[in-house]
Image 1 (tube, rainbow, N blue to C red):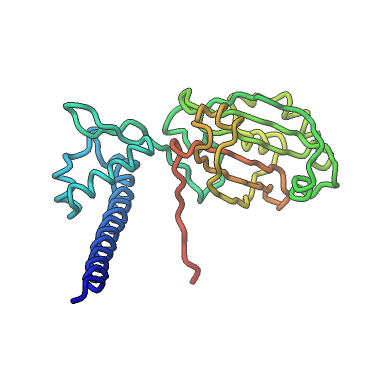
Image 2 (image 1 turned 90 degrees about the vertical axis):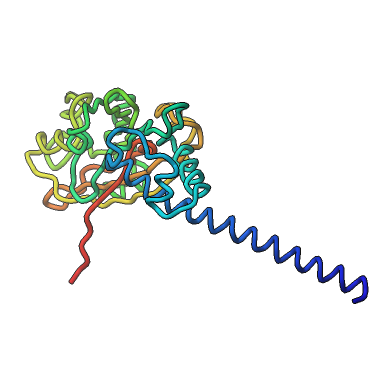
Amino acid sequence: MPPTDRIRDHAGQGATTVAAHRARRRLRADQARQLADLLRRQILTGGFGSGTLPHESVLATDYRATRNTVREALDLLRAEGLVDRLPGVGTVVVARKYPHGLDRLMGLAETLREHGTVTNEVRTMGPAPAPAPVADRLHLPPGTDVLYIERLRRLNGLPLSLDLTYIPLTLGTLDLGTALLGADLENTDVFRLLESITGRPLGHAEITLEAVNADTHSAAVLEAPRGSAVLMLERLTHLADGHPVDLEFIRFRGDRIAMSGLLHRAG
């Protein structure tokens, strides 16, 4: 075989070896991600009651994975801040996420009542001209003043969400804004206040949930790393008669909340 052909043949074999190596790495990365998803579920549902995960060899056997795959999966969970490795102890759960249901219309304190005390720091509150998209969603004339509220919400003292809320100042003949300005917003969900003040039940809400990067202000208020991912929940809540009454933009710390719901397939 001529030298040139031998070089080409050797290079081809090398390329094949590199491609195979990359394929193996991709496969292991895929398997590690799949295992991390399963372990995350166990962590979030209290599956490791003692707070300590089984040894890597046990996890490898239980999940039919290699030790390298287990290590990569644990690295992913460590990067999320869910677990850490302690010398002489092993991998332990160091953080938890609180469940937030998406199948019932409830305020944060109602949703998390089994997990501790929700308190609200009212950072800003007062009348403000409604931006055009807000006025449109609340069925108000452009430029109408609304009640704007910004609250930092904590669970057991830990920052959990930053809520930006827009509420009509009036509802028919009801002076809704004045009533809310005099209400105990530090210890009471807006939902409960709206039902109490209006004397009407809330009916339904339209929601949009997406992940966004925390801006400088939100990160500082939530005590989260700048640029970290937060869960953005946009929620437009209506009274039982269909009248829109509350538009919220809620930024949740993604490392402290887990959204869940029960979905039914239409027959």
